Length: 223
Image (cartoon, rainbow, N blue to C red; front, side):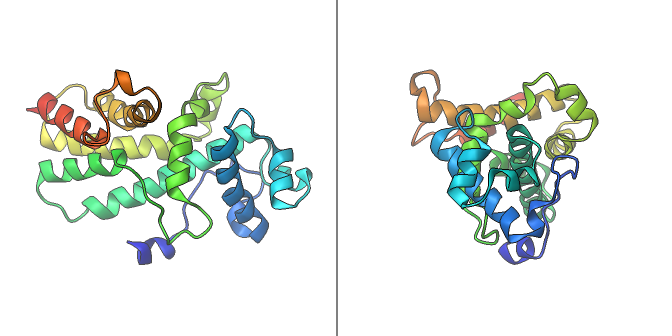
């Protein structure tokens, strides 16, 4: 997996950025350090000025890559879902048993994330923490419909629809495959958030994982 990913370029919609950050050392540094800074202070408190101070570069240099911090967050989200899609495809391609394939897919999109050493400048474990806390901010904006038309969320939707296809293979008669899978993918982020911060309103904890919950839910729904 690491060897394959190291030879692949994660694809992100070019409309999200001004200049592709993957094409320069500064761009990669912006991505690397923005992940660490957002995790440390939160997206609301994050500014390009603070990022510039952290990387030792002018604030204006960051604007050469991203129009604003919202676009940067959308970029990070798109990168994450593209990386997740690669994991999903590689892990399920050779599985012939339909239920096993679905369980594997659900596990991948709901499990606790560890850093992928194949991507040196991006810590996926920390990026996952950002998605858990901030992902809805990429969608819940007045510009969401226009950004959707421009394909900003295409990779996220593609991840969901890949799993929808597997659900339909398991149970072609189930009428709510899209609603189920979108609930699993986004709901798992929420369950991780509750486990970390609002423990009294979730059954997930140190011994019962978010993955176990969604595997159980799916099995009962599709039986």
